[in-house]
Image (cartoon, rainbow, N blue to C red; front, top):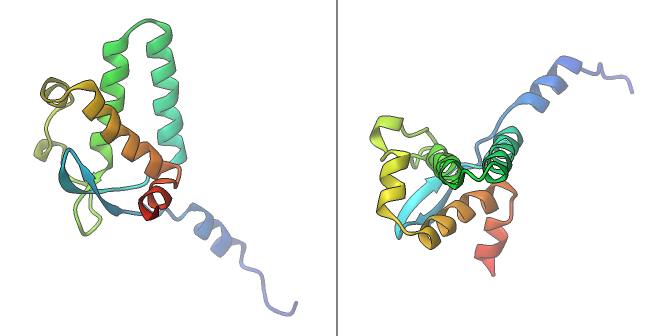
Length: 121
């Protein structure tokens, strides 16, 4: 090994984030979603557990819908401004539980890398 090993380059590569945006269908419309970061998914799961443990199903639903909204992107991979999207309460009022669960499931499957595999089959 005669080449100099660049630890700064390694650290930069380890911390470089990729949103991994894909096209999918949500609520019957073409949508672009990003892959959640591990910390985002864990924070959502922790919040969900706390809400469910305390019997606050409304809070649990709000957390999941907020997670869904936070994943929506433009086709060129930019985040959609919150003001351009419906509110959490608007989505909860507009859709039944199975429809919301399906959309949230799409986002969560993409977060763990299984959505692309499921769509191939």
